[in-house]
Image (cartoon, rainbow, N blue to C red; front, side, top):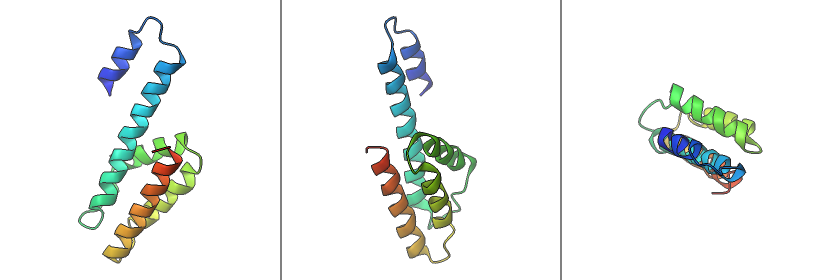
Length: 101
């Protein structure tokens, strides 16, 4: 991600399109962290600083972000593993949908 920031910073005619590329790239990276958490939440406690940072970023960038963040954090602590996985995947899909993915 740093490489992309550096590359776009050096574009002489940049403009809003370069900022949009960076925002989309950061959003994709955050959604990948959340997807990884949804995939592994039955095996490990996924409530890491990286996940919290990704959720905060998504919450600030998409409509319904704060609600979806709260839902995801509730989902990953459901006691039943199958229900936990299902709930986390459902919230992830909603985040991806709101993000236009």
